[in-house]
Length: 426
Image (cartoon, rainbow, N blue to C red; front, side, top):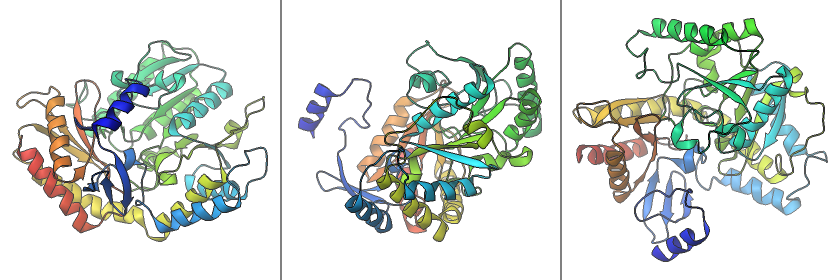
């Protein structure tokens, strides 16, 4: 692979990261497995960063893509587009947002960028609340609401962003409190923060923080926040790019763990809905979505081919109850990994929900991140035929486990056994 690696370094920016000391070229996949250019097979527990949500080479999706491509590949949003309308209708119904409108983009970054545009236009304010340890994308506006230094390359910003406590349960100044006290403290912090600001446009939050290491607050935190936000007219944007479509098992959307005060004003989605195709989007109340007073389109958002893929993928997911599978198999995998990590001094915490599991590593006897250990486990797992991810925020290092939602019990055990050996080798 050194030849392709050398060519990559010659033309691709230095800041485009590659996993592994000997980077991997994946040539094809099937189900939950992928193969590299040397013909080695790997069990895929990261799914293209949670994007191959259903399965590799899923026949229903590849057939839909092929058939649509044989008719027409592209027309833009300037023309009526039946697959786009049909997928928007299904997503609007599933969103839980009343009188919902759907706008399609090509990525989660672009979806969050659109949500920020809508919120600031609707509220006539450029002040945004975001969570510490958050990640919302790569564009200028989404970087400016990302509370994770490793993924925020500039301090320049088109927005004034204020960061709120609560996204990380087991670290920070409130970690010692019980769940109810933790929520009360975070709400008090939010109330205090709003006393120091002018009108705020929106709070944007991931129900489970993805890049930050699959961290989350106690259930109900964002419902408690919502009650405060409503008093001030502030919008709530739920970033469901990683938590949507049933990945958490217990809920179809991550916001539903915090739904006691109602649905968000907007939710953003991407990644898994296209099962590898470039699909993102925003769902919002009509009043919010329709607030723009200038023309706007998306040249590639809502492409007939990507919409056909999304429709086929969503249909497969619902018909085969992959949310239920994520709950059942994910629950087994979580307990299996907790057992595997028991007695491994480097493991601080195994956390998660459904098929979204994080293993936080620290230097033994401390709360200090150990990125070298995370790299060692990543390499060892790859050597034994398993692909996983990494993440983490402030002074944290975490292994990220997020297989396709069709994962079988046997495959969960296979991956857990490889991870157990890699962890115990530390």
